Length: 618
View 1 (cartoon, one colour):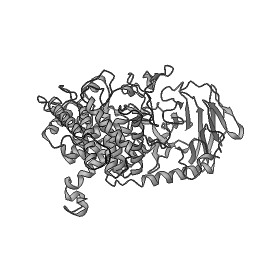
View 2: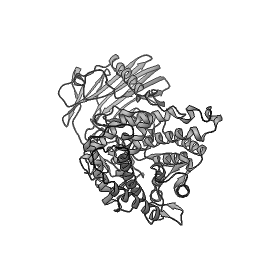
View 3: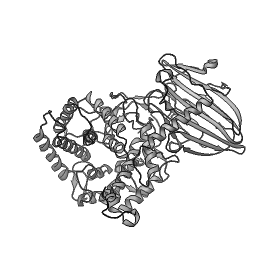
View 4: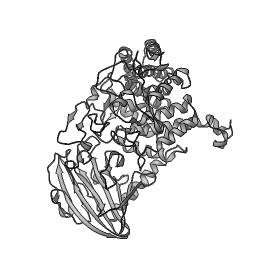
């Protein structure tokens, strides 16, 4: 098989960490115990140094994959000349067994022969700490194959005979006939002894429990539109990228996958970005996942509490600031794209859009009756006061380039939105006994509107522009309608859309972020393309065009429904970290926008409902 590319991978996880699995049955990326922990397998970033765990048949095969319906349990099917081999991969969801009797983490792999006779070959080659750990794997007899590193014990238990490989790691071969299976359980623990799970029929019980748990969760999704399969898959991806103990959602489970092949724009995305918060809350709430939405907003309030009134660009899964960025020179990077980075220096940037995003997410909680205690309300007031002081400053903007600060139009709109939402909360009586400087907020809000409508508008282009007094456009300007600053049907927004489509649009409904991305060789940006669908659905264009564009975008997912950050519009090749939560949030938001617009925009003959009926008005 050809080497796996970004687009080829599937994701498994358990709400603490996640692994990428290639079509060749190789786990090429796994960070344990958390998303942002050092890797155990990192062949994705360096096949020679990073480490991998590969299960595949000997000889050529035709590969097909799928997730079991409405789950995050992956099945890879190898059709060979001699028979059919199926590999089932998952991180078990333990809902019944008490946590203190099991290891901290577990990854299960089951191999079954469905037809004929197939020889299974495996290589287990863990390389802790991004390949820097030199600890050998030791034979522990009935306790399995053991590796100790950094205070963690990694144990592989299997019913397949293994032996040390020619260089390092473990190697094995086993011929399976129809009806026979092989089982693998890799565990990690750092908290004293744990009961190691047996393999065999017990392994299949793990699979059955996890399938049931995932299907119960997916069954709570209240979206019932025509794109349910894609929407539920995106929801399952978001759930995988949610850190269960805190509710924070990481942008992606990977680091340093390049935005430009061979380039240096390789960033660590294993953290939780504040700029994603409004869309993330909207996605969870819109699909009926109130518990996940409230947990996420609670994480957001806890994280920002520690740095108020300054709001950082992102925080880790526990709400801590992780600004230290390091380069790992021993890794050659994905297809030679150096440098490989861990940590992200963008945490220290000024992104004024974060305030509007975060406060909008909190407003969504409040609209649904969510409780905000006095300390949280005081913090929101401080954020508003801070915005009134800093909104005139230039910032790095939503896309956080490292080329200096500018007066970004979208950042000003986000500051306007922050004050707009705070005033809304005040009018709703949410602030109760907390005094709010209402007139100060109103005055700053109106000054912002005037600044945006004069300096953010280019009369010659008949469009809003990327930076004040500028002449470039940016896809983020479509969000002016989403946030209520402008009506999507207004002449200004229609003009802005035409200019964005003219300068940033490309085939199949894709959009680049801005003109800089196009000149620097980046791909089209996933969420921007879904923003376009949402804008059209809101009335900025034709509903049929919005639906057609959405259908075309769905074809850019990989074979198991996953999206990266960017995509090459000519080849469909995925770029950037993968899978990208922001892109999947964009898909969900676009589907919700289409569904909200459908009753009053779509002809009666397509909906099958009577105009004016209770169902239509709902």
